[in-house]
Picture 1 (tube, rainbow, N blue to C red):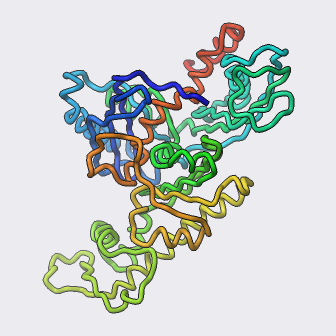
Picture 2 (picture 1 turned 60 degrees about the horizontal axis):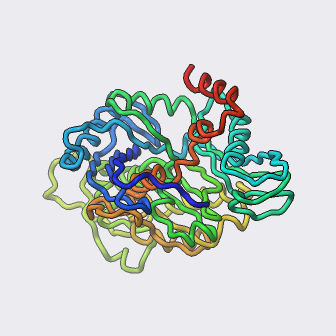
Picture 3 (picture 1 turned 120 degrees about the vertical axis):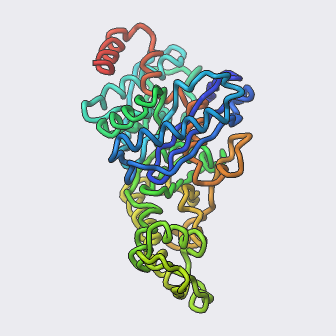
Length: 422
């Protein structure tokens, strides 16, 4: 499907609210292809957020404000004193749910138009409206015209009857209200929401991977989320509330050391795969609660690896089980791309290949220009992908679909407006 891009020169901001960090990217559309040039970045260690959920509104709000200000200051020359007003925000996978729907409409032999497609999508949206969750994505996966399968772009074709298979993603209303409140208190409006792992995939997958079938696994601080792409679109997403912070907690408990020391040990010496050198290599583990660091506490590196490996293995096994239960079968593809901060642990790719029995590579943002080195790694894939989403996939936003269905369904639009606003 030909995608509409935001016009050249458009300024957009992305806010990735994670369990370990909050990141803000301010970007400008650099060309007619929708490529982004990053003008400002800000990132800050999270506070008030645990396993993808806001647990302390005030703390979360303070960090969001600090992060956005840092990005605004870096982009000050271009923004010319105008404060940021609108942001596209991630929805953590633990608050999202995938639904598969099929919508059928009559086209009575005339040429199928964009409005016919939107009519079918709007019809499906009306089936999933609820007070308990908000519709986040409406993604057409494939079309049938008079029973003929495998049609990707029905516009311009003729037929009597059109069906569309749709992947819809809903978000938990309570979690969304908390996020909207924290962001609103920072004087920002949410212009769009995007599931974290969808953004990560848009940032780090090449076209062929999206087309042929690929699973993205984003291992964040408190959440590991994953999504399956096929035919150029996301066809499934899910998450488990386990991530890099749980590995750090295991190390702190297992080696009786402070959390910040455990994090440092994980980054400097951690590995997901044991090697024959681990037994002979000693690492210094600061003892919990002791100020005297002069007396070293040496332990073999194998002890650290022995703590990290089972937890990462467990994460991949949980993902494998969820993908198996999804019933997607071969659609999951033979390829896996790992992103997220915890995907940087040494040996993780080999362990993923072993557990998942697939080809695995590490992913990082590939679609943005001007990204500073400090924020060009896998930990920033979600923030980068949020810009790609709003630039290229805005037609998958439920409100956008409803707003563009022509007046034939005015009553439906009025009902939708009341539902959204009251």
